[in-house]
Length: 193
Image (cartoon, rainbow, N blue to C red; front, side, top):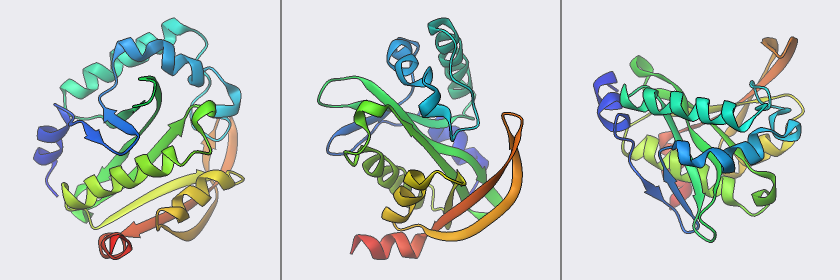
């Protein structure tokens, strides 16, 4: 995969659609919806970032994201619920290894929308984009040990658990053990048939 392709696609991030979600670029106008979940310690417990301390912090973050979109080096979509029009989370690529045709994905979902299959729907959509539009060979996702809900989601979309890297990341002042799940293109294609 070529870096030029990433720039071309993500400098004008495409809008994707599932049955219940619209995946589009994040906007400053999403600030109130994002702050509603990003401020919650329960949401960020198993994430690398701390809860947002104010609506202004969320606005500043979304302004920064807009700048990163313009340079083609931010690969995360806003998840918008078709039913109510709210921005309810994010899903996308956190990094790419272009020479190896691989990427890592990540996601977060607002608590009132959890347990309804929406995150699964979003992750499947992003996996399809990665394999079909970017011609990736492998997509992986990581989770902090103890986050069984995230691991179950990864396995539900066809990812295989590959193991733990003991205390491999320092997150919020603590060394945390990180699990990895991954799926290969032919496995994803097979799961659709």
